[in-house]
Structure formats: C-alpha cells, structure tokens
Figure 1: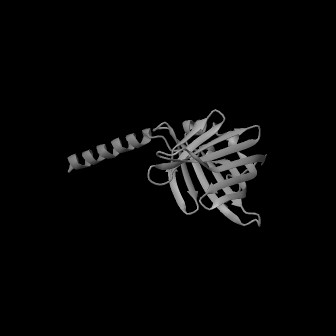
Figure 2: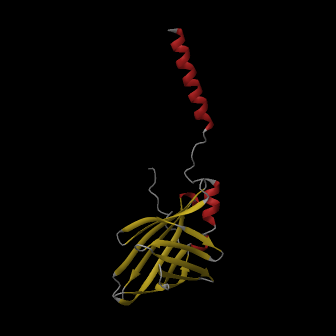
Figure 3: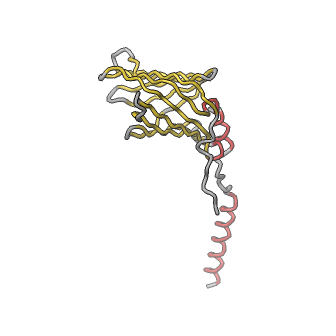
Length: 190
C-alpha cells in the first residue's frame, strides 16, 4: 500500500514539475509571431478603388474596398475585401487571416471567399506580398501585390500548364486612412 501511495505521489510530483516548466500561452501570440506579422503593417487601414475582372463572361469592373488590421495582440493580420457593382450591391466578399508559424518558419494565409475556403502559400515581398491559389487541374492563380505611396496595386494571373499566363484580375486601391478594425469593440467582461 505504501509503495502505491509513494508511486502515485511521485507521478503527481513529476507531472506538476513538467507542467510548471511549460510556459503559459499568451493571448497575444508569441514574440516571433508578432514580429513576423508586424512586417505587414503597411497594409493596415481602409482602402478603396477599382477591381477589373476578366473571365469567360467578359470584363467586369467593381468598386473594391479592403480593410486590414491586426488582431490577437498583433499576432495575426485580418483582411476583408468587398466588391460592389454600379448599383452598390455586393458582388464579392472575402475574409482572410495571415499568421506566422514559428515552428515551420513560414506564413499562413487562410482565405474565405464566395463559398470557398483554403490555406494558401503566402510570402511577403520588399514592397508587398504574393500568394497563389489552385484553379483546377494543373492551373493556379498567382497574385502579386505592391503597396507603395498609399496605392495598393494587385494583379492575379491565371497560369495553366502549357499556356501563357492570362490576367484574371487587376486591383488598384488608394488608402483612405486608419482603422481600428478588427480589434476595436470587443465585448467587455461586465
């Protein structure tokens, strides 16, 4: 009996010691995550301009808006995009979250748009970013954005094996100003 009690006590003591060495996760992510995501702070704010989409149905022009802000203490970047037709009706709506996985040493880009969602490769560049989404067998859309002097210019090219790239979308936005979205307006504890 004494052996059982001693063995149980030893297990509890070792478990407590091991648990004490594991740092408590931060609600604001890690230092590495915040540092990596802060590289994208140039995207923050409210943006408006045009998006021209060229596809099998022809050419469509929308008033495009984007709002971008940090969340979870700066460890993620949240983006909402909306495209409006001439009457003001929403024709496009998307939400994306950019994060940084310090264990893998890479960014993650999770997108929700028009009933689709997925995790896509994302890479910051010197003056913007690039990402890519599958678009069928042996095809993808490569997006490249440049954000400079208050102008966000992004293109998406349809790339299919054995064919020259075709411009699918071109977006040109002007920065309107700052936003406290999405971090503002949290529900108070009382």
